[in-house]
Every structure is written in structure tokens, then in C-alpha cells.
Image 1 (tube, rainbow, N blue to C red):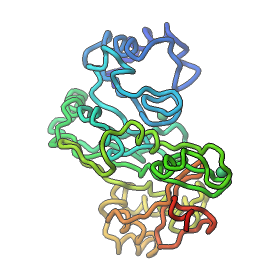
Image 2: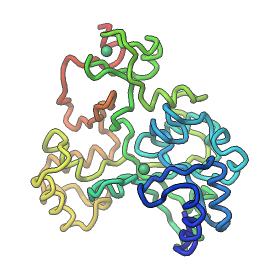
Image 3: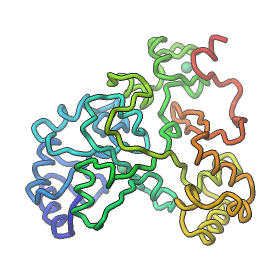
Length: 324
Ligand SMILES: [Zn+2]
Ligand SMILES: [Zn+2]
């Protein structure tokens, strides 16, 4: 985060000497994480480094393929300047609450929109209540983790991710990491090593059981982007179609914006515009009652809105399912 474009230009001048900032939105810099933080703070003490999507398997703080085991291991002396961590689409607050070493950090959530599709924007977000909204008060709310100013984050359930559980899609095997560990991370069908998911990495580093909530943790809400709600309610989750977009636009034109539709608009009003099926799905989301078939081995997770999963019956759900 930076307070103004002047600060960004100064920072770019410094970082430009360590790598090509133009060729990629996510440039590779020849420097350690600690050096990066020092360079940012050289520009001003009111700039903030927030490690992003910290559990993504590749190039992230805790990623299973190249990550560190703690913030301190990554940022060394500079870790005192890290106040917040961005949980990314692949994790939600409860996954992060399982590591006591993360208690002191504010957990923020961002869209990570790297594509031009409009529904990628705002799929995760932070909700603040600032008396006088400004960069300064925003930064203060993040650094202080004050529950009166930082109200909650909006999350997309990480179980929708392609690598949440462990498994083998070819063999139809999907396992919670605890079950995979019992099997020595070998596939019970073909005997080869399972593709390991993000939850497994959390399980490895966690020092608390699933479901633990530390004191002082900020609340969160699970939502699903409206486009995907429509898509899963009416079809099998296709990512783009004219029919879906038409329904999406009808709702937006009528009610103003996506979050209002997902959180506030009375359901009978929604159903009068687009029918019961979508309204019912939104009800389930509001009540936190959406069941999700977790993603694994490159297969996206999906919501089960109407009690019947549209998936392959051969698929093995957990160790018990396999042994049955
Ligand atoms: Zn990203
Ligand atoms: Zn297999």
C-alpha cells in the first residue's frame, strides 16, 4: 500500500534497479523479502507491505512448493514491519487461525483479479467503518486490527479452489489431508504419490486443531461471486455464457450492485426478477448452508445447492468412502 502516486514512483525507481517492472504485473526482483521491506520503508514509514495470497502453492510466503514455514523465516529482521497478511482465494481465516504464530497479524482479503472478467473483481474484500475515510485511517485500521474500524472480510470458500484437498482426479480419489497422511500420501487406487493440496500444507504447519478461533480474530463472511451463483444455480458452473451474463445484468440493473444482492435485497424481490432457483441459492449462501465438494488435483470445488451433486458416482469421498 502507498499513500499517493509520488510514493509509488519513488518506489518504482528503487525496485526498477532490482528487476524488470514492466514485463509482468508480478515482477521477479533480485532481492530478499527483508530487503524488499527495507526498500519500501525507505520511501516512507506510511507505506505497507502485505504478503499476498500467502498459501498459493507457487511463489507465496507459505506455498508448499517454494514457501517458508514462518513470517520470521521469510522476512528476518524486517518481519516486525509486517502487520497484515492477505489470505488469498486458497485460504480463509479459519485455516490461518490454526497457526498461533499468525495471531498477531491482521488478515485481509483481496480479489487477486489477474484477468479482465468483471466477476473476478471484488470476489474477496475488506469491510471498514472509518469515521473519516482516508489513507491514514485505512492504514491505522489495518495495522491496529481494531474491530470497531475493520468490521469483517468477505471470503470465497477456499474449498472451491483447484488444489484444496489431496487426491488423484484420474483415480477419482479425493481425501482430506489427515486421511491422505494416514495413507502415507499414496493413492489408494494406483499407489502413486497423491497431488497435495493447500489444506495439507496448513495441516503441516498448524499447531491448533481445525475449528480453533483465537481471541481478537476479526469476523468474516463466506460469499460466492454472483456470476458463479447464477451459473451453479442454473447450470453446471460454466464460466461464461451470454445467458448467464444477461441474468447477471438484469439483477445488477435492478438492484445496483453485487454485494447488495448477495447480502441485503429481500429474496422475494430477487425471485421476482430471476426466479426461485437463484433466490434459493442466495438464501443458502446467506445462511452459510452451502455444502461444497472440495476441489482437488486440478478439479475445481463446487457448491451443492440442491442436495444432489452433479458428479461422478465413482468418486471416492474420503477414506471411509473408499473403504466402504
Ligand atoms: Zn495475485
Ligand atoms: Zn491414483
